[in-house]
Image (cartoon, rainbow over all chains, first blue to last red; front, top):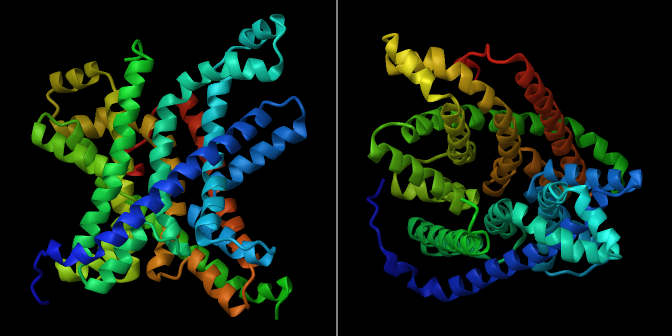
Length: 222
Length: 226
């Protein structure tokens, strides 16, 4: 084996592409967060529904996507779109797969939050003449937010980490940058180091933001 | 050739691939449990340096995608360390490295769930650290450790799909290969997803039973059952 020399300078020509890759990772993560929260809220409310088939549908959704690999879902979305006649970019089909997968986890987190709100709160809202939507918006969700705050933070980090798998369906994000820049320059360790640092910075940014906002919002917790 | 019926011809290959997926994830879980135990003992030790090293390891895996670790083992390790890992070895290494981080948290929680008094009682009986761990703390910690370990196994099983990216032909990669051979479409990927679902869901149901049983039955489990 020839001796290995560490040479970060060899990576410099690839830094422009890295910038694009980081932007793609951030865009993918943010879009997934927003969409999976929406889907999660929808199914979490459905799981509380009085109509049994609706509850079953929501349970089936959660159990199916929690028990299948994200990567398989990404391939599935990627290959299904053209067959059903939808022209989507890799980014868009990646977003579909990511949203469906993480939506299931969001449903569980939000459901746990909804369960934590006692029934009396709904009744109190009702007795004030609020509609169900108003109760959800003004009474329930603020309390839900408190319960889900910590698990939600973890989930946001999981989304950033999970977005690395979209490199498998040709989305040019950080993991994909590591592979192409690495194979191009044959500097795998340096590209590994940069990619690892990029992810660690993104994840720790979320983590620290979570801690600081958490301290400001809920000073009595911990 | 292009109908769903002809996919049946590939089913033996798909089931063999499912076997490989289960083998790979099982191996990673066992190695991860060993690594996790080591890390958990470091985390709960009296030496600050050991505690910090274990903490750094766990935090690292919380901030770096497993795919990046896999690329490191598969593409980076041959260049830097001179190890030429096969796709299987690289996948096993990456998956067990991640599983170690997850298991260490669970095992640590288990060890910490055992009251201080149990340590003191063991020590006052003249037990060494190893004896106390093996006979007093371990069996009690097991109750806390086993149920979440089932979830970790499911996670590792799903995660093992990334081995397909570096060319190890397990279940996901087999699905992709068959898709190519079969002229496109996505039916085979639906079958693959369904197989993952059946296996993972069955394990999670079994885990639920285990969790309920352990709450009732109490301890009586041995450390080697990890």
